[in-house]
Length: 117
Image (cartoon, rainbow, N blue to C red; front, side):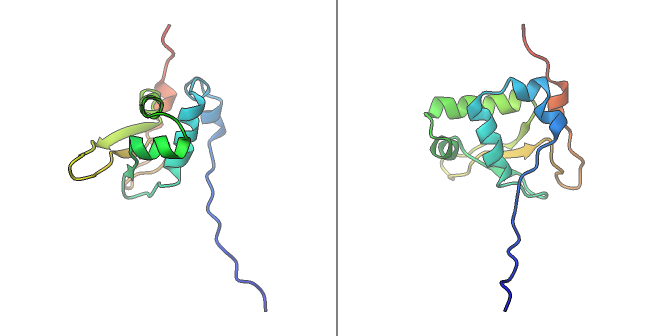
């Protein structure tokens, strides 16, 4: 009897995005966070991901995790949809700008990023 096939999930990246100035200027922590956020992506809901979770999963201090979020947002890879609520234990909710969201095409805001001099 043959083993049942297990559907594997994967993350594919757009080569134009990887070669972009926005992507190339990201820190290693920001790239790692982008990959981790994508593992939570669903087309019809924003990704809930906290600084504490990023800190734990990346293996860095709180400040470095916060900086990674700021990099991804300022470079146009993620967009804040709903802010955190500490007392209700709700993490920030993010839209991944290079993936479909709520029947909308990707905004690809990373294409508009320009390095500061």
